[in-house]
Image 1 (cartoon, rainbow, N blue to C red):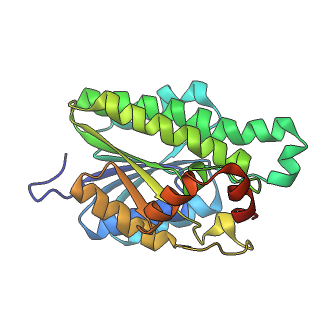
Image 2 (image 1 turned 60 degrees about the horizontal axis):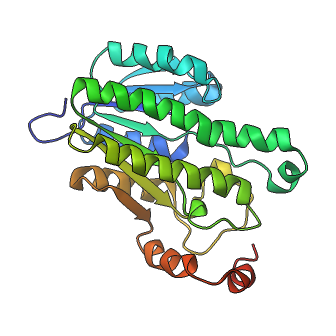
Image 3 (image 1 turned 120 degrees about the horizontal axis):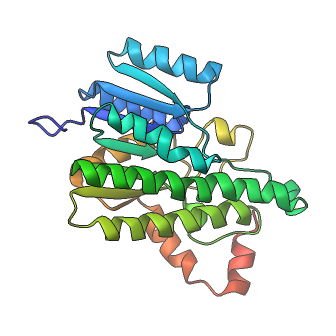
Length: 252
């Protein structure tokens, strides 16, 4: 439960090694969050994240979580909520895939969809149900501008984010009036470990900038946020371009 000043007391991160998620956790800890649960596959990076967040004053727990193992989500995440109320759930897992290779390997392409969309639907529904049962909380879903209009350079990844975005919006509508708030986050190109080595795109952003926007959005009760904010207007224009023109504009 949030304190009297509205500060988030507890955070569950699905995708506990995400650069954006960890930047958000650091921001919230600085704003009095004390319980953090990192749900992710065991790794040295997860161990490092735990040590960092504990050094900042949080009580940090870890839960072994694999987004693709949807049959385990209810048991795994249910145990987290059984340990106490969660104020904010940050759904931050996802894989970029390799567009060129995945186009030639339908099974690999399906794995991207299994993680980014199917896994997110399962985990999102489990967490939404738990938040509704406790009567309060926010579910923050990391979408992407890539889902606004799929480009040939990343249409597999983009299609999974389009599906996730639509799912999250619909879920938010279904939970309206329940005390549970859903916020969709649409960052542009984020300079992170996932995109290391890739050429920057216009309106690039950073994990810290996305984290700042998430914390601000939570305070305002926003339903959709763009990072940077100007992308809202850029994508509004691109969304309505005729397809022949869009193909020329979106060559990358």
